Image (cartoon, rainbow over all chains, first blue to last red):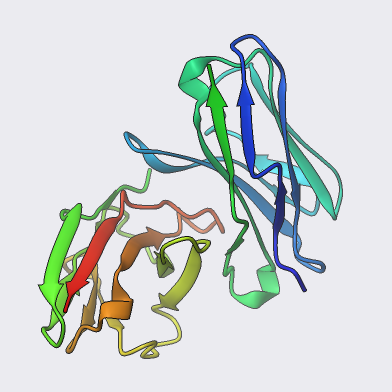
Length: 114
Length: 109
């Protein structure tokens, strides 16, 4: 398995534009997590899904952020409109509940909003 | 809500010296505790978890419920141990992890 796959690896956009980050979890994993990492705040959980259903979205900063998981093999995190303060590295992770809740991380998407 | 404190942002030791990375958590229940590591240019990965009580790459971590601590230790640090280390307990009974801010360990030759 190639592990958790995120795309794009880097994204540079202008303020006000829509940004869509993508994640493919490890096959067979039933939980998916979106994190944001910044120097100031560290690694923060934004939202997580279990069996494609959002379980906890309390970390989503505001209405500009939305996440979907239409099926077990794909999730998106969308920011609309983007702002410079959204610049960060966004990680996706997946886990299997029966596997002891060990989370496997993707390589991340580095987002720069100018 | 769970809070995690890793008091040292930076830790520098010489090769062969003992190393201890501190972690304290706030939740007084029975969280699961993990240490994750991120080596240069690699993705974040699990190092060890308290349930398994293993030693991974020479590292061990003891859960002290009285002090709500889960410090990571290694008796003889190696240069390849240089990395960012994150302590992460679960929140309540969920699979949600709360990450500390991390400690950057540098092992000098």
